[in-house]
Image (cartoon, rainbow, N blue to C red; front, side, top):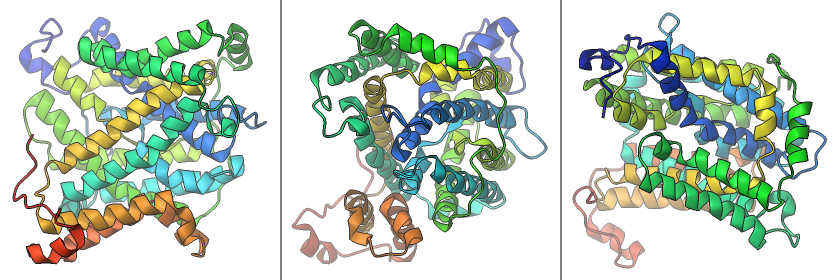
Length: 474
C-alpha cells in the first residue's frame, strides 16, 4: 500500500516527482538492496568457472574483487541512464539495472578453466553485444511477435536449469573441493541450509522490506553462522578489509581486447532475450506504479539504456546489465513511482563500486553460504520461466516445439562432449544449451503450421501428448 505521507496520490504516480531527501534516500537504497546479491553473484560465478574464484587459491583471486566492484559501479551507472536519461537513452522511469543472469550460460563455456586470460574475449563480446542491444531499440516493437511466452518462458527456464548445478556445487563446498572429503560435508550443507531456511521464513512470514530483502538477510545470517562455527575467521575478514583500498577508479580495457566469434555471436543473440525482458519490466512498472501502459518512447529509451549501459560496463570490466524484475514488485508495493528515488539508489551503488573495501567484505562470504542464496535465486529463475509458460496455449503444436527445443538445449548442457568435433566457436555456442534451445523454439514457432493433428504427436509421446486447448490453470 502506498505511503501517502511521502506525497499525494497524484504525486506518487508521477515519475518526475521528487520526495523529500529524508524519504527518497532510504527508499532508493531499499530498491538497490533488493537486488544487491543478484547483482554481484554473476561475477562470483564467472570467476569460479574461470578458475580464480572462491576456494581456488589462485594468484588471480584478487581480480574477483575488481569484478565485484565493477558489478556495483556499472549497475549504478546504467540505472542513472534509465532515471536521469541522456537524450533518447533512458526511459525516465524508476528502473533499476543490474548484472544479468541471462548471459551466464554464455560466459561459462567461454571462460571455463582459462583464468583471467579468458576475460579479454568476454568483455569484447559484451561491448559489441551491448552496442547491438542498443540498436534493437530502433525496432523493438517489430520483433516482439517472434518472442511469445512459449519462447521467452522456455529461455528463462533454461537459464535457471543451466545455473542450478552451480548452486548445489557451491553449497557442497565449491568446485575446487570436488573429490575431497570436505565436499558435501554436513558442515558445508548446514551453512547453506541456514541461508535457505532464513530466506524462506522471511519471504513467507514477514512483509515489506524484510520480505523483499529475504535473500540478502538470509546471507547475512549465514555469514554470522559461518563465523560462529569456525568456517570463517575474524582475521580473514579484517585481513581482506585492510588489503582492499579505500577508493579506486575503474580501468578501461583492464583485461585487454580480443575478438571471439563465439562471444560476439552469443552476446548479440542473448541481447534479443534481454531486450524483451526489459519491455516486460517497463510495462510492469508503468502498470503497477502509474496504472497505464508504457509508451513507445519509454520502451525504446529503456532498451537504449540497457545496451549502452552494458557496452560501457564491458569497457571497464563489468558484465551485461538489464532491468531487474524485483524492482517491479517493489514499486507496486510502495506505490512510489518517482524516478528520483531510484536515482538515490543508483548513487549508493556507484559509491559502493568506488570503494573496494565493500567488495573486500563480499569476497569473504563462504562459498557454502553463497550456495544457499544461489539455490534460492536460481530456483526462482526456473519458477519465473514456468510462470511465463503458464500463459502458453498448450496445444499439440506448442508441446512439440517445447519438447524439441528443451531436449536439444538441456541435452547439450548435460553432455557437451556430444559436439566435441564442431569448430570451437560453434561448439561453445551449442554447449551453452541456451542458444540452440532459443533458436529452435523461435524458428519452429515461425515456420510450423498453427495446428497439428493428434495423430501427429501421439506416436512419439506414448499417449502423453496432452489435449489442452487453453492456458494452464492459474
